[in-house]
Length: 263
Ligand SMILES: Nc1ncnc2c1ncn2[C@@H]1O[C@H](COP(=O)(O)OP(=O)(O)OP(=O)(O)O)[C@@H](O)[C@H]1O
Ligand SMILES: [Mg+2]
Image 1: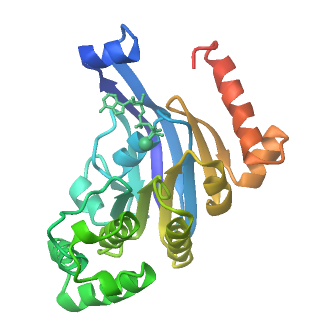
Image 2 (image 1 turned 120 degrees about the vertical axis):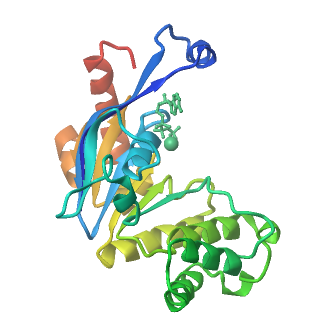
Image 3 (image 1 turned 90 degrees about the horizontal axis):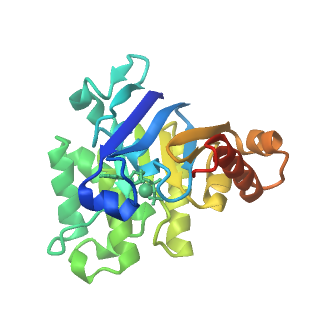
């Protein structure tokens, strides 16, 4: 289980960033007092527009950055991600479509390399590799250098490698970004498999259909604040709508009004 408790992340903007953002305020509150819980066997989706704070939240969870306030806890032992990040790290895998693999190596070599970085035994690495390479169709490309692989195969390889440690919590920033429909389906099907195996899965997306189809519960984040949280049905009931697109517009409008029209 994962509990995000009241996290806030404030970036300090450089003069150049302030000019680009057209603001005189050197502080950007990217995530504003966000709390939620994700259980084993569940896919939780953070849904929000560009700049809403999705990636920042996921980075805080996966120990890549520290929140300014709040904390994140894992499991019954409540391991603190902020205060015990070394211990927490072994429980996660953070996946992003932006992960770049070194061109000169093969999927096989890279998988073994990252497996040994995690301190896995050779037979464990082989076991995970057999499973993941077969799920993502990498077997016939395992000895081909990354630079010769197609974009889709590179992404599938990077996903397989990110899962080398068989983590209990899988965090995936924009899982279908840049993927064609077939590759996207392989990836979302596998996230469902992980969920069914009892893993805790957290994704971010700005695509309504991905959230509606894949996520057991959805948190709608707008301008750093979590505006709504629940199952698809709860969100539709709450907003008296029939689809997530309509629900999102209503939530967005309410957020806009609540902020005095500044979003
Ligand atoms: N390193 C940084 N320094 C300053 N501001 C940042 C930094 N990273 C993100 N931001 C700002 O924080 C806000 C939230 O960004 P974040 O990347 O978390 O949003 P997002 O929901 O992932 O958006 P997207 O859909 O575009 O990926 C944005 O306004 C962004 O410009
Ligand atoms: Mg993002």
